[in-house]
Amino acid sequence: MKKPFFLLSLVLLTLGAFLVSAQAKDLLDVRDSDTTPVKLIYDTDMGNDADDALALAIIHNMVERGKCDFLGITLTKSDIWAARYCKAFNMQYGRPDIPIGLVNDGVTKGPGRYLQRVLELKNEDGSAMFPYPEGWEPEDSVVLLRKLLAAAPDHSVVIAQVGFSTNLARLLDTPADDISPLTGRELAEKKVRLVSAMFGAFTFLNDQRFVSHKEYNVVKDLPASQKFSKEWPTPIVFSGFELGVDVKYRECSLLNDLIPAPNMLQRSLLFYHEGWASNDQSTWDLTAVLFVLRPEENRGYYSLSEPGTVTVRDDGTTFFTPDPNGKHRCFISDRDQKIRVEEAFVNLCSEKH
Ligand SMILES: [Ca+2]
Image 1: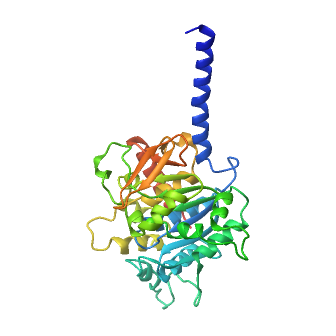
Image 2: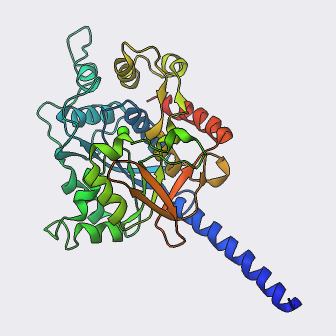
Image 3: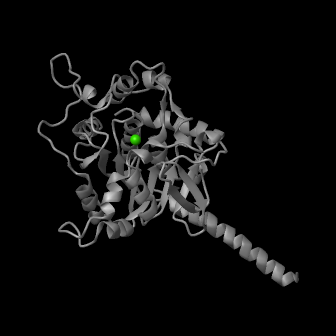
């Protein structure tokens, strides 16, 4: 190889590596500057597990710190108690006006283990311990998504999807209406910057436990999961089952750190875990929220896979195929990173509200 050509190749290779790295950073750094809050929609199946409630506490505490502009909550758990619970939760954190949308005839009907029970707790004088407004009704979740996206600046919204793909899949098929002249697909393409999805199970850590795992969020509404992974027009970062299962929000923190205690979050987790051997809680949904609200690379919470495509098989298993033009990446968190993430969860969940 002639020397000038060799040097040119070296420069191009270095530049290429820099560009890949810069693209990865840009993808995750969803702020316009270090001080710009992240515009976030929280799409959740609140009530099916308790990690959704912990993740909502993190969002509120990041709003408190000026790091998150909380646009709204859209629910994929098809039960009115999920909406009432989110309303009461937002009121506990002093933000009663956060818009809330509920899926119409979705999956997982029924209040689950803690939603209704927490809202029916009473003070000594008979008043509700965690009140929500009598007669209040949520909006339709897809209508709310259209409204929030239509009102947002272009390319500005991050959606944390930590339940099923029902709402986002349905949004894609909505026509232009009096909310927006854009179809749902066009709204997603124009307004959404990134989706951070707790979705699937991957094997980046070479852990064979996850090869054939049929992840709950994927299989409960499989057609929507397949449509979302195949057709959603913006970049998606996937937080797989393998991340949250090994990072716990510990019983010790649940019982000792939550201030004031007892509070809604603590009651919810205790009801959810009632009758089980341990109150340790896996943190799937927390990872999908934390990594976009604290995207700074040097915190050392995660690494990113190369670009590629996530595919959902008909049996509900998921796999990742590397592809330089793919819109998908996966979060990867090794043992040392998981220790830092677990500590961050304790700090962010337990701040006073
Ligand atoms: Ca969830």
